[in-house]
Image (cartoon, rainbow, N blue to C red; front, side, top):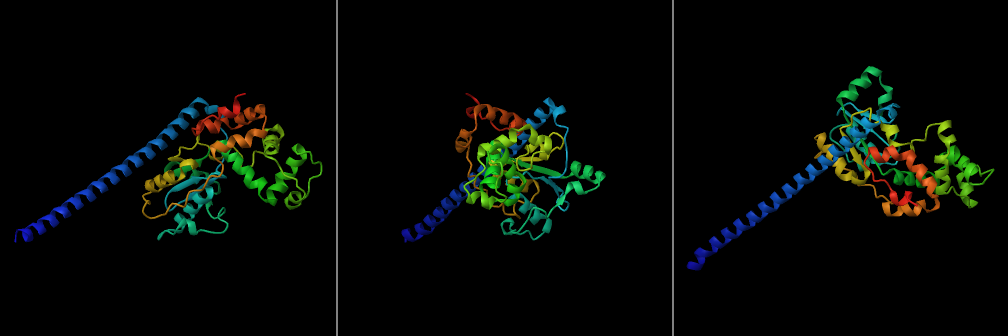
Length: 312
């Protein structure tokens, strides 16, 4: 009889212990999540503070401005400044999902050519542009400048890319690759064993004539010249290196964290460790000149100066 009375008590006690452990576990997870959100928020605040300090120090050097890379979502009061080779495909997918409205779809399901499916701020009247820049939530993402350059080279000159070969590749081969009459197509060039080397690409960037003819093509134009962070007050400045966290933070700002799935983070095949290998063919003096061209991007967006590449 005693055992019969004891069994319900033991079961009740066990249930209490199990519930208590579950509660502690949930509380621990909740605290961990809050601390994570607080850290991400503080990182974004630190990035914006750094930009404000840098812009204040060199305000006269940041007067150039255009709105070509700013995309608008009026429904959510959102402006995104995209930078080629900085996860812009995934971020544009999110913008397209937002544009379509509720129920929000999965950004990963957006296919086809996505790069001209969003409204550009520059197409609006001047007064409207000023109002939206003042009141809308504005965000952009940056990336380590040298890693972004390597990614641009791989995508445009290592892979088969006929438009870029026609517009830039043939001139690069002629001017820096010792090919007086390069093949007319990239397919023909590759078949003949003719390739644009990474150093050829760097020589093209360092040549003063490149900038004199036309501003840098957007895939290798300096990030601050595309998004003008000294002239536009952004609410979020993400890094590709922390894209998952920063995109989640953006959705939280928009109160959409439960409605939209963040696309899978881009796997960066160019790591900091491999940068040295890429620059082995680039002479030290040219590395230093290249850093000078992208120095403002390194400083504005808080990227470490690559001393291992710049010291003799």
